[in-house]
Length: 113
Image (tube, rainbow, N blue to C red):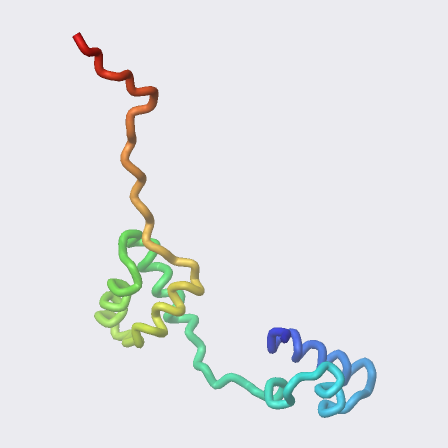
């Protein structure tokens, strides 16, 4: 099973270069025609993504929940599930603190007197 984008390119290639019909090209590569004909109606999130990224770069310790509060104050009300998805797609994450330094070397056994 290939990704829809790959299937779309394959069907477009067969239609353009080999003169096949869309129906026949889909049958040749064994994919559903609805996958090829589908066009997403999802709105563009570029403004939200840019604003989320700028806040995240300013406030490195803020996770997606705190970003949602900040965006809501600015008038950009977003569902928390959508915000979590965009947060991951933008490869944002809370910066981790460094681990505690430990003594290096061997521990000498206690001397018994």
